[in-house]
Image 1 (cartoon, one colour):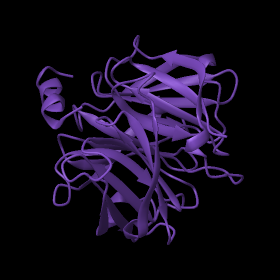
Image 2 (tube, one colour; image 1 turned 120 degrees about the horizontal axis):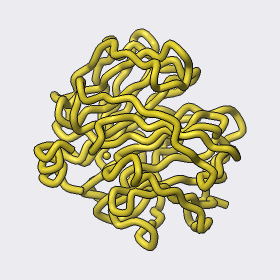
Image 3 (spheres, one colour; image 1 turned 135 degrees about the vertical axis):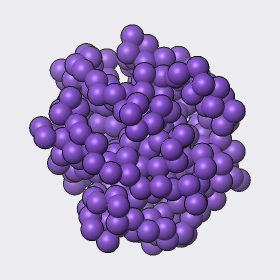
Length: 280
């Protein structure tokens, strides 16, 4: 999805990554395969832009650039997306009418939404962990100096770093937070270009050890894998390989992995569906 298309959707009113428990093994994208398991989100959202799971796999959260909201789902079987059922939502339109990135603090008491139009990260407190209906806006941090088309968001699990993907610069921008999880204390550090692999990057997932980065490409219809020789240092990234999802989705927006790395989830705005893959 191009910036022009995003702006058209905004005018009409209308693109992971999370902290994980221990036990992660780097996914093998070369041997990944579709599970023939999916879940449609079309009843709630016709332009899904990001995806996030609770670390135990019993909840999924879908960001919508059409409804301008975060949609919460419960999974009756952890990590089996076909068992998802809609619970509730929380609107973020007061902060941005084209939200593109979503992330939660490790304990579920904070939520962060990346705004494409505002070119900023919006921070929310949740009075009840993992319950989006209890969210309240706190503050924001502008990324406009580095990126005018922000599409993806990820944090280091301890909250001391944040990464913003952009389809204007076609790069990943790294920021340090002097106070963990307090977005107002962020400061820009450096970036890494993904333009050689993807000219329309949409979603980002950083592995829990900070040694792998996965970028969703809406132009290549794939997931691009990078290795970081120095953990959490985006300037040390190098391209490894990619995995095509074109057989399922031609506008992939976001990618997320199970806590042990054995499952991959991709959501797209072409079919408004979450697809589940095995990565071993």
